[in-house]
Amino acid sequence: MIDLAQLRREPEFVKAALARRGVADETMDAILEVDGEHRRLLQEAEALRAEVKDLSRRVAEARRAKADAEADSLARLSREVGERERAAREACDAVGADLRERLLMVPNLPAPEVPDGPDESANVEVRRWWVGMDEGADFPTFASHQRVAHWDVARELGILDLEAGARLAGSMFPLYRGAGARLLRALSTFALDRHREAYEEIRPPSVALTDTMMSTGHLPKSADDMYEVPRDDLWLIPTAEVPLTSMRRGEILDESILPLRLTALTACFRREAGAAGRDTRGLLRVHEFDKVELFAYCTPDQAPAAHADILARAEGLLRELGLTYRVLELCAGDLGTSSARTVDLEVFSPGVDRWLEVSSVSWFRDFQARRANVRFRTPQGPQFVHTVNGSGLAWARIWAALVETYRQPDGTVRLPDVLGPYFGDLTIRPRTT
Image (cartoon, rainbow, N blue to C red; front, side, top):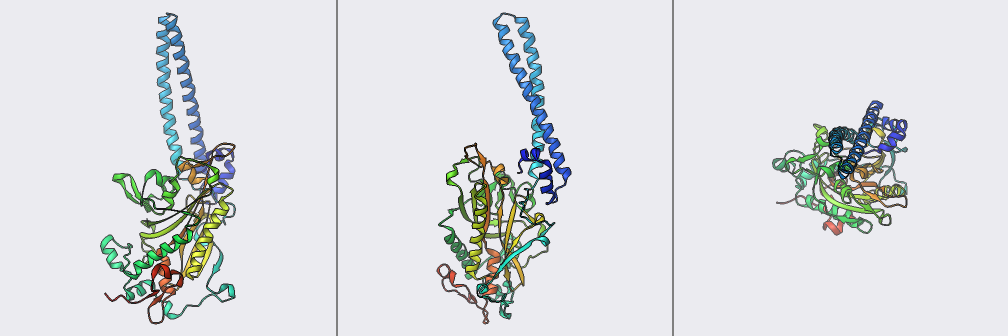
């Protein structure tokens, strides 16, 4: 969550920053008012508590002096003040809970370099890359055999069965078959191998407690987009970012171990509640997909380099796979709740003639760390870490772009050589059984 002390200290600065994200000044003014009431009640409760302690001391002194009447009178007064203290404490707790709920709904302050804009239409394209670009090749033109949608390619080859997936779990839960399933496994192993020297591999649970989901900012704001298991107070994770952010929850880290870099392959689950009727064909938008995540705890000074490293790794994978892609700087109005800055990577998928998002690389400042209470030691005392994460990569759309980009005139798919050690025979032919 945002720094409440900063809001108190610099209310106009914070309100101006959040206005870029569409947060009304009145929202923040109301929070400041509730905060003021909370602090007033806290002071009142503390003053009454001090009075109770003083009365208790005086009762004890009167008892020792055999002044029973005075002691009884002071004891009655102590009980009365105690009741007032409990009432003040209860009122303080109720207002404090209200304050926390309000703060949990406030998004992060956008970084200064984030462009202004209300939604994705204002995102800024930073650069593009394609095979041969460095040698001066023009932006690729794709042949007619590459202009076939991946769901048609997959049906011809027998490597994706969307109908079977729908029978098993409902629409937008894909079922991969044969070489299609092997391609997913190959992509994940390929990516993890590229990251293993610098990032510790983690295999977290695929479910998370409510408190864990709160730490990243996915709850409460995005509850409608999550899959919940209410009987057990669990949620299916939408990304490995959720468990990785909370791995060191409540800890104070030694600065010497930072940046602490982690990577994880998980299934990811998203209801896509706002996507009814949009992009639901094939693998454009699915409820379950595999993703390799890159994550770092770091100091504020290390955060820019950590963000740049994750972005470079994600781009490096796309270049090795030979996929055409572009880099977008997200505007303030399109940032996720917790993000201070996000850079998206989108691959060009020739069969659907569209750019498809395959990675978001985000810097959260200390927004998530405040919720998870992850700090590091400094000579001046504990300070909240910064968190950075990004996909390296999300595979459903990569899978789609690969089978379209590498489709051959005879209908087979010839995968890039870099996948050879993980896939075997790189040519995908029609399945015969």
